[in-house]
Length: 390
Image 1 (spheres, rainbow, N blue to C red):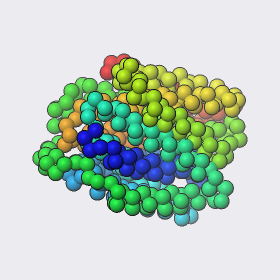
Image 2: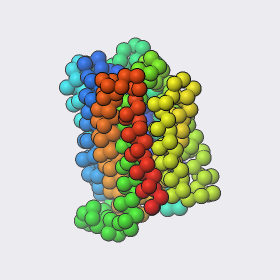
Image 3: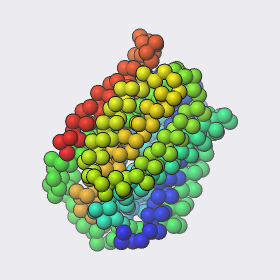
């Protein structure tokens, strides 16, 4: 690593704090929206609108980070996140919740920019392992975030969002004072000369990139379908509230952190990124088919553990493969396009999941959750077929 360990430590802390705030929301937002009379379909739309805005903004923010540097874009996105959480915590109507999600989505390019930062300071052969560092920060954020959200929901359903707003503001302060710029001035100059996204693909293997993007897209559709409906599924099946779901997501965060932060490096020395991507997609497919068959808390926890392992293997390896295919001056754009594809998937996933779960609530109450999760398993079979062709 050319720039030493300190920048990586700071970017890890930055992503960790950001994901704590994001994780706080996961077990609470679906139940919070229900308080305003939102149906499962409307909850899916509420989750999807964030991704719709991120889909439009992520490539632009990625290109901006290639031109002006990673640090200013990180600051902008984190401050937008803080404002979005503040509005959510103070919301008194469903419309204000949607506005808050739009603001957060437009400025929500911090993950792809952080990935570009990692790409700036790691060698190509260490790229997937570096992306695993972001995945580990994701996992650790999911340990503390959902647990904090669950505890604060005992105070009020708005309290977790206000805490997340303060946390994001503190994160922006830390970035301003502690994080150095990673992109050299000459690379920023090259980025200003680049004409279009087509040029980016023409400089790499277009077929391989298309397969990577498609695999990532379908994986994210299935995973976001799951996360958007999981609290409603466990509430119906086991009577779990926001606190219970917070503890489950915290446990899954531990699994994700171990897979991406500890196991990924040794696994990459034993096998290839493609093999790990195939393994991860297969685990996700099997566990999504098994999830609605979980009749006890132990079965539920075992199945969701496999989901966490599978997702951890897929996310880091596919981002690493995409990053290795781009030049240094185009990392932000490449990873921004990856996040745009993921954001598009996060529009489709929650909306599809909410609609299918609403179908189960009306017609299949005795098998609640079967339709969305078996559909998600079918989507993962498509992703598995694509991963084999990588």
